[in-house]
Length: 163
Image (cartoon, rainbow, N blue to C red; front, side, top):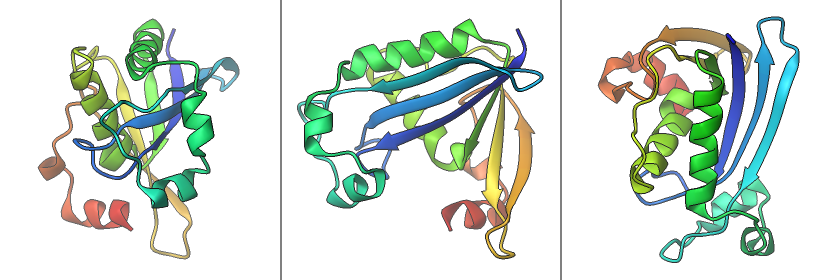
């Protein structure tokens, strides 16, 4: 099936190497944008992790929500990987996914001993906020998933992604 996976992550902070994904939500659609599957995965905090208070305010996730999450970090990352593999080839769509979510996912795969590179048939699509009043603009890049190097994104694109 070729379609789209619209996804977003909520995390404990902004640094891929030091923070973790707490929630992964996705809508899987076919080519006609009919919803095929809805996913909302939440995990508990890893023992060595301390969430940023600012991140908790922005995401709206409370410490109680984190403590009562049904999955471990490993189980959630395994479920994310299975979802992407199950629906490949597909197009992953997210807001600022190349500049942030993709790095967080790659780090989570690495930390849970999963391969960080998935099937080459996945296309990552990034939504960048345009400078003209916050109107969303789309910029697509086709590449092997999770393999984008920060230096390969044009400097102007990096500035737009970082705000």
